[in-house]
Length: 261
Image (cartoon, rainbow, N blue to C red; front, side):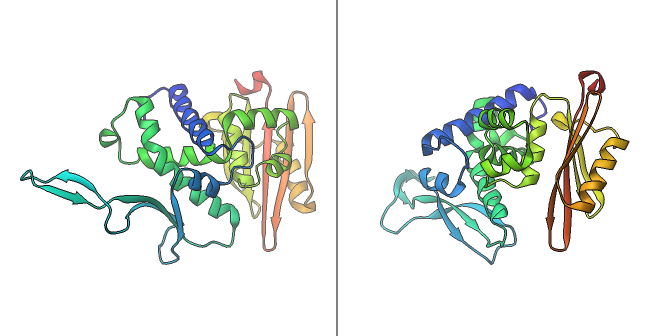
């Protein structure tokens, strides 16, 4: 995020850019297939297993014999070869990772539109700004704000129900996206019996895990079944994301307004 830009303005620029991309691709409902979006935007997607990263956005030189006229430093007419926006992806056994990698590179492609909406010259922005924008665009591309708010409200923010609806996004991405709405919630991710992530809405630091949360988490960790506990205005829900050799649990704690303050 750009530090001098208000968070509301920044979020609006991101969401407007995503809406424009989805409209162009005529994608009207989840799940969002980033490959379909890339094709609609005229971006070539190719596989490159030699690269170290999962994805890379490049502009490749097009076929010989085509080009655009331009003048060189001595005002001589030259022909510059055209370029083709392309995304190179490394193969990955997890489909969700491939979706995220492609969504991120589409974010790289569209980042200039966010800068434009914010009235910022990309050349004068902090070095990490484009990468940050690409990340935020990727999460909103797979989980558009208006759609997610509607669907989450209908299913009561049930992680498994949202995963069925937004199949191209990972459980973790959906859980983290829950924090982008102005709600008094805390999301906790536990891996192999240890807390690996805990945050409140909009990146606020979450309070230490309380007794109710810990008991719910441990029950799910042992049994591998979704559970929820409630005490007064505090509702804790925990979902198991268990695989062979790895146990992850994701908690969503809904706080009362008084507790959140």
